[in-house]
Length: 242
Image (cartoon, rainbow, N blue to C red; front, side, top):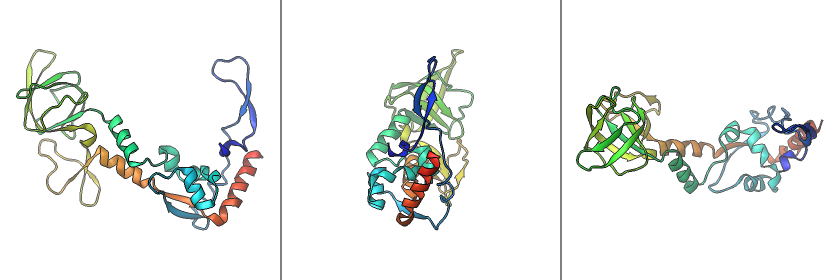
């Protein structure tokens, strides 16, 4: 990687190895980029096009793929969360992180239908294991996707004392399509009464929508102006070498 070519070597001992080896000192850092990262004199705002890699954006802006690393130093979000994904990658990523089933109910569940219990649909006969709960939203998360009906089914579970418990499901959906939170007309996150529901003035934000919004925000990045890139990169590398 071009970013590390200017890093000097140091002796480093890996793990429980007795002898140190020569290795690049990747802990080095220079604040040259930090000094310009919020300055409009040196920066432009750029929208990353769908599917463009960092090296391709570098070519697009500077005529070379070698300045891709400046995007990560200028943009804290990119460094912390990574480069924006293309749509199909984002869908796969979201489904991987939310692979289960979300059942929503208006019934009180703080004292029943606890983690580890098995629930059964009284009409469908579908069963599943409770692995998480969100009491603030009236949600029960079921392992996998066993195929509960969309909503309206009475669900039963036997607790550790042998008592049969019942609730009515309002909805059942794949977890990534389930509610992450709710927002008002100004986009502010708001609490709801899980026994009443969100109401007509409150909008549901699913996990999929939240991940999409975050991914889209990563497309808006600050970049060093082409007229300034050579000087800043040169100053950074000189500082690292020094």
